[in-house]
Length: 177
Image (cartoon, rainbow, N blue to C red; front, top):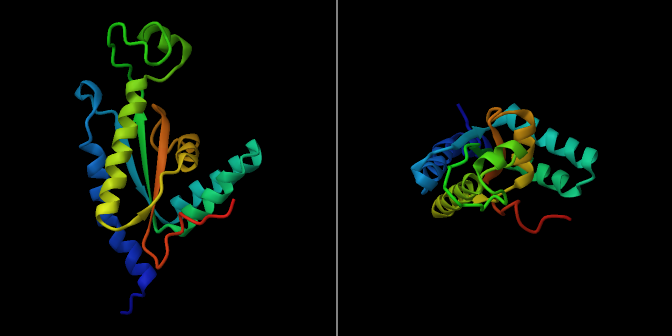
């Protein structure tokens, strides 16, 4: 059997992708409540997300979604990180812009702590990827496509994608506008 570099690199990225997801999982969470959802996506499922990103680019007139879809195509693996919705019920908080959690829920808003926890988890994830010397870039666009596709479940309305690449030059920088 002969396994060439690109195929080997994709297979070998699954272990580091799990480590990156673990770094996100162990990041601090508000009130110790873990609402993080993560998934590792490859092959046809990854292509489906890139295709949805291109559809969003056309539908909504947001050109960078198409550019980011090319990055997802170039990545061997795509990690998705999202947060389930659950207001933390902190009295007098108001960080979400509403008077209280009841008002937030009536308006269909998202708890600021849920989003903040997701941001901290993303920071832990990209730090772990950097420790492993794996090229990566946080993509709002990939997360939006994943949310539209329902990949992380109906309770996830905020997500980000983290494409991973092992190549001679990172595809995530010096990108075309």
